Length: 617
Image 1 (cartoon, rainbow, N blue to C red):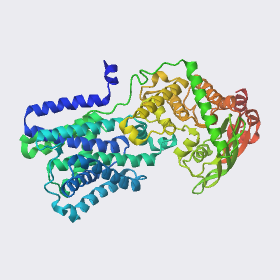
Image 2: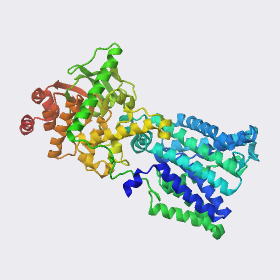
Image 3: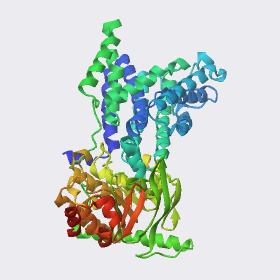
Image 4: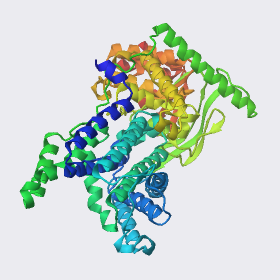
């Protein structure tokens, strides 16, 4: 029964549920109840928009009433001055508020926390004051005599009529929001909310997605504003105050941030509960506040939280044998290599082969104040090898990785990957060039299922447009199916397909490391950087990790490894570089590194038993 329900299209479920609600309210015959229901629908539309900004992307917006006002004034002016019908004004109201979202979003992209809240609050107040001082829009008196909606000659003027229109607009807003939530764009937003640094480092363009979140959120606010204007018949600047922004924020927090059903439930509680308590007159707001505080204490995640775990994420996909999975991955990666070589040949570069230089690090220096974390380091990594970087803690290894992947810009030096410089590129651009990575400390997206974590890693490989995601076009559906199938293959590659539907935080430490590896491989990198992947693993798990690293090399992917486990390093590495206090002190094959006096002095130590242990490895 549950599987049948999940296979039912979301749009059909929304229509059935809202139709049942509409029939129940309308047949009740009470205009007061219907009017309250219209207000609930309006706040639900507003909540869906703010849920994109706050619930998905994690951007605190305290000026959301500005979008509501822009949509309302756009529609009202077009109806009163240009004599457009209500439904004709909707596209422009949505377009103008989306543009306002871009205007707000662009200068605030790099802001977080308190600073972001202050800027959005200022934007809301500036918008209200602008309308208050704009004589064409009626100034402080606002716009009066806004006409009722007209549908093919039939004037919609009763509360029941408005409720039907509100339910239709709410259904459209919910379906589009659901499509965005279950697209690569939605996964990118949730990844940014969980860990922006990790999201950017696996290929998610965080600044672009933040801007899109404001644009999408504004569009939903504009839709609700236009509906509000025609329903009320008169608007003024005092309808769009800071208190309204806070009330909409309460809707999504109370219902459960990121949850579409939670938005509906939150709107019902925030709008409906005070009306139920109206009999208590002056005390009702106090009672309402106490009940809200109590609910948040008892259920801080919201009344209907968004649960991203999925028992059967690959239900309905064609089964594949383990050998077929490995062969398919190898075939796809080889196709990527051929495509890359064709592009290089077309650009006038010679095609590459195993043994050619893939990564050239030349004279790289990174400094923090008076401390040189990386000091004039130079080495080359050849295509198809396993290259390890070892050294004591604080030796500059992770800093070097950060310079290669665009997290930090080196103060001096050259980093050339596949014939092109990557210095100064943002991390997501570096990923698109063909460099993947894992992190020293596990940085999975904790509020996402395992398979979704891997699907985020596939972000750079797909080009679905935002409008395709909203409309859930056939091309976007095929893209999503391919993404889901490929996430399954990579999880099978690291032996975690059976755990794909669980939340990332529910896995053991070693399994979380494997998920990170699968996520890094999902973008089909030509070079992958592993930062202490064996940390926290027992001996058996380390042996399995060595097998995975060798299988990765067999796919034609070059591996650069930072690791403190000397046994593992000596067994899998083709060459080893040793860093000590940011300086490269040795670069050779494993056997020579074990005998190098400088390495023994700086890292391995002079104890005979320690040296013997390394030589035995």
